[in-house]
Length: 349
Image (cartoon, rainbow, N blue to C red; front, side, top):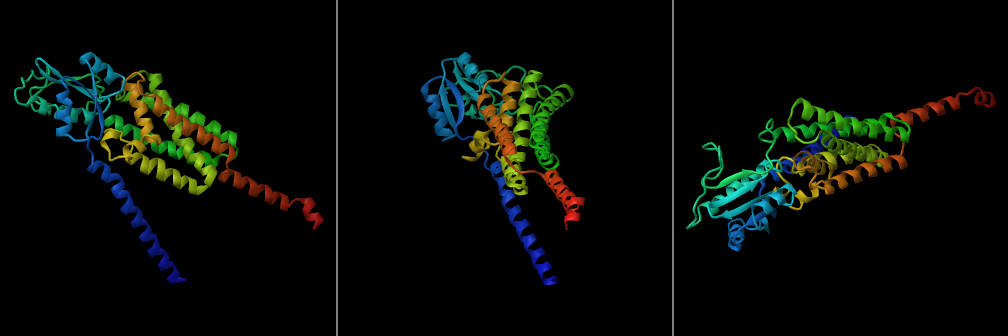
């Protein structure tokens, strides 16, 4: 018996170390290999500009030619591109959208340095009010078309506030599965959670912390749809596979989904295809939807909203056709015990 216990202890240690060995690269590799990969940008200027960008950064940018600055800004606001590089008579300009990704905004500003220092180029004036040593390239006019919220100038609050909602949504799905017996009660509980989580999270982030701009109800809707999608997906897997479904949901939607979500940077900066895969998971889709609703008046919200809706509806359907949770099992056991000890059965025996 003691030998078996020792063997089990060793196997547990080996299993945990193996999982740890897989989790470290899962989180570290995307951060260590962050670089633009087919990053959508607009370019207004001679065709040679795009050629110079490709030569200097092979495979980094997916260039969309535009006629002028107005067309470039429209593409940025519609979330078709992350930014734009323009060649004007006064020198090169770079238009960024830090609201879409502060990291990408910095990368685009750095990429424009080559245009400002090319042979024969005349550098334009620095952006008005730009402090020395701000990280912006000298001689390039930098315009932030969709700036970050003034109370979250580096965008870190946006990223940090999203993780607690992901954790609590996963926990909500687990609790609903285990503690509610009836399937309709589970559906009602998850729908109520989605509504209240959206309203509450939006109130905290907008009215209290002031780190997320945009219309309150639109932001609440985005956060609520994410909360419902995450919680319903976990509860649905639990209803389909039992306790194993909870582990599958935590691994796929939280551990893997968080690592490849691209919330802190952009999906196009992650190694592919993981950046694209992350947008099909709840956290990645939720982050993109919230950015669209808070910074871009809903532009680009269609795909992430559809992904989260699919998770929400799919999870609710699995709950309706799935198995009972802990509360249901306990009730069945109690009923069976009462039946077995009923006077009629005792008399019959």
